[in-house]
Length: 348
Image 1: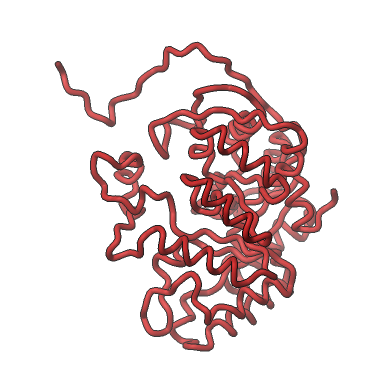
Image 2: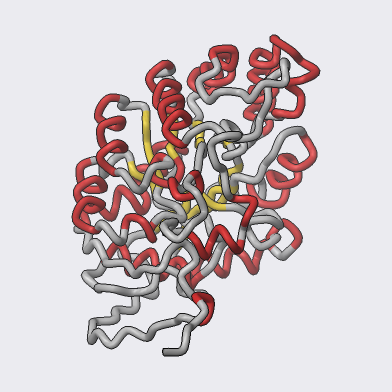
């Protein structure tokens, strides 16, 4: 028998199944987790805004949250000037902490980061974005890897709570990224394509140590609204997510870049999204892509079975297909629009 390289294996399903095309969502959409910068959002900061708005209009997206505001005045102010100021109800811009200043600011970093974020909000930022380097790469003033629940950062989280703006936080990554890269790793293809996404322990912390610290952080700051990005960073274990949401009313989640995970456990995913329908935000994390939006709508609205979660090419996050959730209107409307509108004080 001739051996076939895994890269060349691309089976064509013979399963006869329904294929529903959803061109526009059942309700208007707020994309609460996305980007406009060159790395993740397609570089829309250098393209005409009118072209972007046309794309969003065709996709049924009424408001778009850009998480690429960064730290300091230059990037954030440029985004606010180009997107937010001329189109105040169409765009939301987040700021971020300047982790690189921790070494110079020393033990006072938490206070100074809080002051810096307060200034970002005064200029127009409507949220704080914490990237996944926090917990994996960010070091404190002693040179040690910073822990997600480091108590010295309390002023930053408390400031977000005081100002009434959310903290969208991404820690860790898919569980398989922390596993050995061998024949049992279900993300083998993805990790070979992106070897810098591997976080073996050691030298990195274990996956659960990061997640436990994240849970501690959310519990400790009950007056601060946290958005757990990517299904609270643990889409492989929705029972864990559900328990933490029950315990912490200040925790919301989005499911950006995780329909690949939710769609292979449709019964559990539907129960979670239905139970917490007022604390789930829509997001894609894939830039303003009409094909991707339509795939998300198909996932949320239909009973379609065994279909690609990546409309732009072969599956990128695992060699499986997904199933639609067929959510009812009473779940779709808050997830698509109402929850984020309430959070960002947009017209209902």
